[in-house]
Amino acid sequence: MTLNVLFAAQPKSWAEYEAPLRSAFAKAGIDAVLSTDIAPADVDYIVYAPNGPVTDFTPFTKLKAVLSLWAGVETMVHNPTLTAPLCRMVDHGLTESMVEWVTGHVLRYHLDMDRFVAGQDGVWRAGTAAPLARDRKVCVLGLGVLGAGCAQALARLNFDVHGWARGPKTVDGVTCHHGEDGLKDALRDADMVALLLPDTAATENVLNAERMALMRRGGFVVNPGRGPLIDDAALIAALDGGQLAHATLDVFRVEPLPEDHPFWAHPKVTVTPHIAAETKATTASEVIAENIVLGEAGQPFVHVVDRAAGY
Image 1 (tube, rainbow, N blue to C red):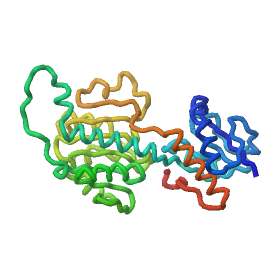
Image 2 (cartoon, rainbow, N blue to C red):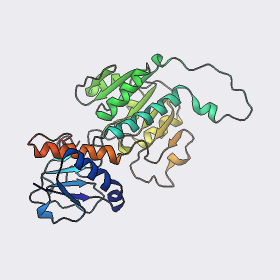
Image 3 (cartoon, one colour):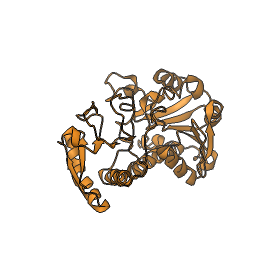
């Protein structure tokens, strides 16, 4: 049976994904019409991005699943017209990128690289070398695929890695915490915190003034997760007061970050323009093909979103 797969995303994404998707379908033995223009009543699967043309799923009467190109699903999870399974993108290529970005910035802070890179002015800045990684506590908030990958990479470098999730988790090489008391334990005396939680009502402002105060004074924050995870005003206050030494932020409540936002001019903030990790067309296409194969075999889809939890 020939399947009808609608690609519902931006035109530039179609140009990027068409060939990889066709290749992944062929390798997986999927017989499908893949197009940006299929009558809704004929569509079996939608390859989807929330900035694309589809917002009302009511006409898609035989829809088997919506396969998101995005890791974040907060803008689509509460759509009342979407009753078919929604599968978020868990792309191993994206995970690799995130691990590289987080590891790079943790090492940058650990080795005090900013001080030496900025100091190429003929001044010999004598000082002590960095401690061993084993003497630095790094806290990773969020132990999903991305968070666990980053935590394990840092643990392999011998950092003392503590991770936190809302529920119990086990990650090799990582001291795992959960619940409110566990969050305090994970953050207490942390030299660095990396945020990799989803954006939900339960995670908004998870890093607030009270929790920043638990960190070791002069600590560092990296946020490639979601902008609302941090209380912006509390972060600036912690930087100005010396509780935190620096923050590197890749995600924000409003993107692009407005030109007049205080983060741009703050000497203790590094802004990167949401480039920590992105879905890779080749590997993401393989994930989509895998889910279609599972669906057609009557098997459970992978990476199905829990609507109640929001991710």
